[in-house]
Length: 326
Image (cartoon, rainbow, N blue to C red):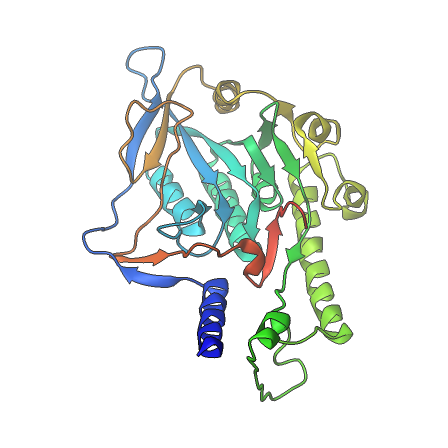
Protein backbone atom coordinates (compact mmCIF):
# COMPACT_ATOMS: atom_id res chain seq x y z
CA UNK A 1 0.00 0.00 0.00
CA UNK A 2 2.80 2.38 0.95
CA UNK A 3 4.73 1.46 -2.21
CA UNK A 4 1.70 2.17 -4.40
CA UNK A 5 1.31 5.54 -2.76
CA UNK A 6 4.96 6.35 -3.32
CA UNK A 7 4.79 5.30 -6.97
CA UNK A 8 1.70 7.43 -7.46
CA UNK A 9 3.47 10.36 -5.83
CA UNK A 10 6.49 9.84 -8.09
CA UNK A 11 4.36 9.74 -11.23
CA UNK A 12 2.62 12.93 -10.15
CA UNK A 13 6.00 14.54 -9.53
CA UNK A 14 7.22 13.54 -12.99
CA UNK A 15 4.07 14.99 -14.51
CA UNK A 16 4.61 18.28 -12.70
CA UNK A 17 8.25 18.41 -13.73
CA UNK A 18 7.64 17.73 -17.39
CA UNK A 19 4.79 20.07 -18.16
CA UNK A 20 1.58 21.75 -17.26
CA UNK A 21 -2.03 20.74 -17.33
CA UNK A 22 -4.73 22.58 -19.26
CA UNK A 23 -7.92 23.72 -17.61
CA UNK A 24 -11.05 25.00 -19.30
CA UNK A 25 -11.72 28.21 -17.42
CA UNK A 26 -15.18 29.45 -18.32
CA UNK A 27 -15.81 33.08 -18.84
CA UNK A 28 -12.25 34.10 -19.64
CA UNK A 29 -11.81 35.19 -23.23
CA UNK A 30 -9.03 36.96 -25.05
CA UNK A 31 -9.28 40.73 -25.35
CA UNK A 32 -8.12 42.92 -28.18
CA UNK A 33 -5.10 45.12 -27.70
CA UNK A 34 -6.04 48.66 -26.80
CA UNK A 35 -3.89 51.76 -26.72
CA UNK A 36 -3.18 53.30 -23.33
CA UNK A 37 -1.38 56.57 -22.67
CA UNK A 38 1.57 56.30 -20.30
CA UNK A 39 2.64 59.94 -20.57
CA UNK A 40 0.76 62.87 -22.04
CA UNK A 41 2.52 65.18 -24.50
CA UNK A 42 3.60 68.55 -23.19
CA UNK A 43 1.92 70.52 -25.96
CA UNK A 44 -1.54 70.62 -27.47
CA UNK A 45 -2.61 68.91 -30.70
CA UNK A 46 0.41 66.57 -30.66
CA UNK A 47 -0.35 63.50 -32.74
CA UNK A 48 3.09 61.88 -32.77
CA UNK A 49 3.49 58.80 -30.61
CA UNK A 50 6.33 56.82 -29.06
CA UNK A 51 5.34 53.25 -28.28
CA UNK A 52 6.60 51.22 -25.33
CA UNK A 53 6.82 47.45 -25.74
CA UNK A 54 7.34 45.43 -22.57
CA UNK A 55 9.52 42.32 -22.56
CA UNK A 56 9.05 41.05 -19.02
CA UNK A 57 9.77 37.66 -17.48
CA UNK A 58 10.89 34.44 -19.11
CA UNK A 59 10.97 34.50 -22.91
CA UNK A 60 8.94 31.50 -24.04
CA UNK A 61 7.19 30.20 -27.13
CA UNK A 62 4.33 28.98 -24.93
CA UNK A 63 1.47 31.09 -23.68
CA UNK A 64 1.95 32.15 -20.07
CA UNK A 65 0.29 29.94 -17.45
CA UNK A 66 -2.59 31.13 -15.32
CA UNK A 67 -0.52 30.54 -12.17
CA UNK A 68 3.23 30.87 -12.49
CA UNK A 69 6.10 33.11 -13.44
CA UNK A 70 5.62 35.96 -15.87
CA UNK A 71 6.50 35.19 -19.46
CA UNK A 72 6.75 37.02 -22.76
CA UNK A 73 6.03 35.28 -26.06
CA UNK A 74 6.66 36.00 -29.74
CA UNK A 75 2.87 36.07 -30.18
CA UNK A 76 2.59 39.06 -27.86
CA UNK A 77 5.46 40.91 -29.51
CA UNK A 78 4.13 40.26 -33.02
CA UNK A 79 0.63 41.40 -32.04
CA UNK A 80 1.90 44.72 -30.71
CA UNK A 81 4.20 45.30 -33.68
CA UNK A 82 1.32 44.69 -36.08
CA UNK A 83 -0.62 47.40 -34.26
CA UNK A 84 2.32 49.76 -34.66
CA UNK A 85 2.59 48.91 -38.37
CA UNK A 86 -0.96 50.20 -38.84
CA UNK A 87 -0.37 53.54 -37.11
CA UNK A 88 1.61 56.19 -39.04
CA UNK A 89 1.71 58.35 -35.90
CA UNK A 90 4.27 55.99 -34.31
CA UNK A 91 7.64 57.73 -34.56
CA UNK A 92 9.77 55.55 -32.26
CA UNK A 93 9.65 52.27 -30.36
CA UNK A 94 11.09 51.73 -26.89
CA UNK A 95 11.75 48.16 -25.77
CA UNK A 96 11.43 48.07 -21.99
CA UNK A 97 13.27 44.88 -21.08
CA UNK A 98 13.16 43.19 -17.68
CA UNK A 99 14.00 39.57 -18.45
CA UNK A 100 16.64 36.95 -17.61
CA UNK A 101 16.13 35.47 -21.09
CA UNK A 102 14.48 32.22 -22.08
CA UNK A 103 14.16 29.70 -24.87
CA UNK A 104 16.64 29.90 -27.73
CA UNK A 105 14.03 29.76 -30.48
CA UNK A 106 11.53 32.11 -28.83
CA UNK A 107 14.30 34.63 -28.22
CA UNK A 108 15.50 34.47 -31.82
CA UNK A 109 11.94 34.83 -33.11
CA UNK A 110 11.40 37.97 -31.05
CA UNK A 111 14.72 39.42 -32.21
CA UNK A 112 13.67 38.73 -35.81
CA UNK A 113 10.28 40.40 -35.35
CA UNK A 114 11.77 43.53 -33.79
CA UNK A 115 14.42 43.80 -36.48
CA UNK A 116 11.83 43.27 -39.23
CA UNK A 117 9.67 46.05 -37.81
CA UNK A 118 12.65 48.42 -37.60
CA UNK A 119 13.77 47.76 -41.16
CA UNK A 120 10.33 47.87 -42.77
CA UNK A 121 8.97 50.86 -40.87
CA UNK A 122 12.13 52.96 -40.63
CA UNK A 123 11.12 53.75 -37.05
CA UNK A 124 14.05 54.03 -34.60
CA UNK A 125 14.09 51.38 -31.88
CA UNK A 126 15.59 52.06 -28.46
CA UNK A 127 16.12 49.34 -25.84
CA UNK A 128 16.15 50.23 -22.16
CA UNK A 129 17.08 47.70 -19.48
CA UNK A 130 15.30 47.73 -16.14
CA UNK A 131 16.20 45.38 -13.27
CA UNK A 132 17.55 42.46 -15.33
CA UNK A 133 18.32 42.09 -19.03
CA UNK A 134 20.43 38.97 -19.25
CA UNK A 135 21.15 36.35 -21.89
CA UNK A 136 18.09 36.23 -24.17
CA UNK A 137 16.99 39.61 -22.82
CA UNK A 138 20.28 41.03 -24.02
CA UNK A 139 20.15 39.01 -27.26
CA UNK A 140 16.93 40.56 -28.52
CA UNK A 141 18.06 44.07 -27.50
CA UNK A 142 20.66 43.83 -30.25
CA UNK A 143 17.86 44.37 -32.75
CA UNK A 144 17.59 47.95 -31.45
CA UNK A 145 19.43 51.01 -32.73
CA UNK A 146 20.70 51.85 -29.25
CA UNK A 147 20.75 50.17 -25.84
CA UNK A 148 20.49 51.97 -22.51
CA UNK A 149 20.48 50.53 -19.01
CA UNK A 150 19.13 51.71 -15.68
CA UNK A 151 22.00 52.51 -13.27
CA UNK A 152 21.28 49.36 -11.24
CA UNK A 153 20.63 46.97 -14.14
CA UNK A 154 22.21 43.50 -14.23
CA UNK A 155 22.97 42.37 -17.77
CA UNK A 156 25.28 40.10 -19.73
CA UNK A 157 25.13 36.32 -19.24
CA UNK A 158 25.91 35.87 -22.93
CA UNK A 159 25.76 32.17 -23.64
CA UNK A 160 23.66 29.03 -23.82
CA UNK A 161 22.59 26.60 -21.12
CA UNK A 162 20.76 23.29 -21.13
CA UNK A 163 19.74 21.37 -18.03
CA UNK A 164 18.78 17.71 -17.85
CA UNK A 165 17.21 16.45 -14.60
CA UNK A 166 18.28 13.06 -13.25
CA UNK A 167 15.45 11.01 -11.77
CA UNK A 168 16.92 7.53 -11.60
CA UNK A 169 17.95 7.91 -7.97
CA UNK A 170 14.48 8.92 -6.85
CA UNK A 171 12.85 6.29 -9.04
CA UNK A 172 15.08 3.58 -7.57
CA UNK A 173 13.99 4.44 -4.04
CA UNK A 174 10.36 3.71 -4.83
CA UNK A 175 10.94 0.77 -7.15
CA UNK A 176 10.04 2.53 -10.37
CA UNK A 177 11.76 1.24 -13.52
CA UNK A 178 11.61 2.21 -17.17
CA UNK A 179 12.14 0.03 -20.23
CA UNK A 180 13.12 1.82 -23.44
CA UNK A 181 12.99 0.21 -26.88
CA UNK A 182 14.67 2.42 -29.46
CA UNK A 183 15.72 2.43 -33.10
CA UNK A 184 19.18 3.88 -32.53
CA UNK A 185 21.73 4.53 -29.84
CA UNK A 186 20.89 8.23 -29.56
CA UNK A 187 17.10 7.96 -29.81
CA UNK A 188 16.54 8.53 -26.08
CA UNK A 189 19.36 11.03 -25.64
CA UNK A 190 18.80 13.02 -22.47
CA UNK A 191 16.73 10.28 -20.82
CA UNK A 192 16.53 11.28 -17.13
CA UNK A 193 16.22 7.65 -16.04
CA UNK A 194 19.85 6.80 -16.82
CA UNK A 195 23.31 8.34 -16.82
CA UNK A 196 24.28 10.45 -19.82
CA UNK A 197 27.08 8.90 -21.88
CA UNK A 198 30.13 10.85 -23.00
CA UNK A 199 29.00 10.49 -26.62
CA UNK A 200 25.64 12.04 -25.75
CA UNK A 201 27.30 14.83 -23.81
CA UNK A 202 29.45 15.56 -26.86
CA UNK A 203 26.35 15.79 -29.06
CA UNK A 204 24.73 18.28 -26.70
CA UNK A 205 27.91 20.31 -26.36
CA UNK A 206 28.23 20.64 -30.13
CA UNK A 207 24.64 21.90 -30.32
CA UNK A 208 25.24 24.39 -27.52
CA UNK A 209 28.43 25.61 -29.20
CA UNK A 210 26.52 26.18 -32.44
CA UNK A 211 23.82 28.20 -30.68
CA UNK A 212 26.52 30.11 -28.80
CA UNK A 213 28.15 31.08 -32.10
CA UNK A 214 24.79 32.44 -33.27
CA UNK A 215 24.54 34.51 -30.08
CA UNK A 216 28.02 35.95 -30.65
CA UNK A 217 27.23 36.75 -34.28
CA UNK A 218 24.04 38.55 -33.23
CA UNK A 219 25.91 40.74 -30.76
CA UNK A 220 28.71 41.48 -33.24
CA UNK A 221 26.13 42.53 -35.81
CA UNK A 222 24.14 44.59 -33.34
CA UNK A 223 27.04 46.33 -31.59
CA UNK A 224 29.87 48.34 -33.13
CA UNK A 225 32.42 47.60 -30.42
CA UNK A 226 33.38 44.09 -31.51
CA UNK A 227 34.41 43.40 -35.09
CA UNK A 228 34.53 39.60 -34.78
CA UNK A 229 33.09 36.90 -32.50
CA UNK A 230 36.62 36.11 -31.33
CA UNK A 231 36.98 39.64 -29.96
CA UNK A 232 33.70 39.25 -28.07
CA UNK A 233 34.41 35.84 -26.52
CA UNK A 234 36.45 37.09 -23.51
CA UNK A 235 33.43 39.02 -22.18
CA UNK A 236 30.86 36.45 -23.37
CA UNK A 237 31.69 33.58 -21.03
CA UNK A 238 28.31 33.74 -19.28
CA UNK A 239 29.23 36.21 -16.57
CA UNK A 240 26.89 39.01 -15.58
CA UNK A 241 27.71 42.71 -15.47
CA UNK A 242 26.52 45.88 -13.80
CA UNK A 243 25.41 48.74 -16.02
CA UNK A 244 28.74 50.50 -15.49
CA UNK A 245 30.71 47.41 -16.45
CA UNK A 246 28.53 46.80 -19.51
CA UNK A 247 29.09 50.38 -20.67
CA UNK A 248 32.85 50.07 -20.28
CA UNK A 249 32.77 46.85 -22.32
CA UNK A 250 30.67 48.39 -25.07
CA UNK A 251 27.69 46.10 -24.48
CA UNK A 252 25.38 49.11 -24.03
CA UNK A 253 25.38 52.71 -25.28
CA UNK A 254 24.61 54.54 -22.08
CA UNK A 255 23.22 54.57 -18.55
CA UNK A 256 20.01 56.46 -17.82
CA UNK A 257 16.60 56.24 -16.23
CA UNK A 258 13.46 55.33 -18.16
CA UNK A 259 12.24 58.89 -18.67
CA UNK A 260 15.63 59.84 -20.09
CA UNK A 261 15.52 56.85 -22.45
CA UNK A 262 12.13 58.03 -23.68
CA UNK A 263 13.60 61.47 -24.36
CA UNK A 264 16.41 59.85 -26.34
CA UNK A 265 13.81 58.01 -28.39
CA UNK A 266 12.30 61.40 -29.25
CA UNK A 267 15.73 62.63 -30.31
CA UNK A 268 16.30 59.55 -32.46
CA UNK A 269 12.97 60.19 -34.18
CA UNK A 270 13.81 63.85 -34.76
CA UNK A 271 10.83 65.14 -32.77
CA UNK A 272 10.51 67.20 -29.58
CA UNK A 273 7.22 65.99 -28.16
CA UNK A 274 5.00 62.93 -28.36
CA UNK A 275 2.38 60.93 -26.56
CA UNK A 276 3.98 57.88 -24.87
CA UNK A 277 1.69 54.91 -25.47
CA UNK A 278 1.56 51.17 -25.02
CA UNK A 279 -0.82 48.40 -26.04
CA UNK A 280 -2.47 46.19 -23.46
CA UNK A 281 -5.26 43.66 -23.04
CA UNK A 282 -5.93 44.70 -19.44
CA UNK A 283 -7.30 47.84 -17.84
CA UNK A 284 -4.78 50.13 -16.15
CA UNK A 285 -5.65 52.57 -13.37
CA UNK A 286 -3.79 55.88 -13.67
CA UNK A 287 -1.01 54.46 -15.87
CA UNK A 288 2.49 55.93 -15.86
CA UNK A 289 5.65 55.13 -17.79
CA UNK A 290 6.45 52.60 -15.06
CA UNK A 291 3.16 50.71 -15.35
CA UNK A 292 3.44 47.04 -16.27
CA UNK A 293 1.75 46.63 -19.63
CA UNK A 294 0.27 43.18 -20.21
CA UNK A 295 -0.17 42.29 -23.89
CA UNK A 296 -0.71 38.59 -23.35
CA UNK A 297 -3.07 36.87 -25.73
CA UNK A 298 -5.59 34.44 -24.21
CA UNK A 299 -6.60 31.98 -26.97
CA UNK A 300 -10.22 31.27 -26.22
CA UNK A 301 -11.04 29.64 -22.89
CA UNK A 302 -8.27 27.07 -22.65
CA UNK A 303 -5.65 28.30 -20.23
CA UNK A 304 -2.49 26.60 -19.06
CA UNK A 305 -2.26 26.19 -15.31
CA UNK A 306 1.26 25.80 -14.01
CA UNK A 307 1.31 23.66 -10.90
CA UNK A 308 3.48 24.68 -7.93
CA UNK A 309 6.92 23.15 -7.95
CA UNK A 310 7.71 23.30 -11.64
CA UNK A 311 10.99 25.03 -12.33
CA UNK A 312 13.02 26.20 -15.28
CA UNK A 313 15.73 23.73 -14.30
CA UNK A 314 13.30 20.85 -14.84
CA UNK A 315 12.44 21.82 -18.39
CA UNK A 316 14.64 20.15 -21.02
CA UNK A 317 15.85 22.25 -23.90
CA UNK A 318 18.33 24.96 -24.84
CA UNK A 319 18.10 28.40 -23.33
CA UNK A 320 19.57 31.86 -23.63
CA UNK A 321 18.83 32.24 -19.93
CA UNK A 322 20.50 33.43 -16.75
CA UNK A 323 20.05 30.74 -14.12
CA UNK A 324 21.64 31.97 -10.87
CA UNK A 325 23.46 29.19 -9.07
CA UNK A 326 24.12 27.11 -12.20
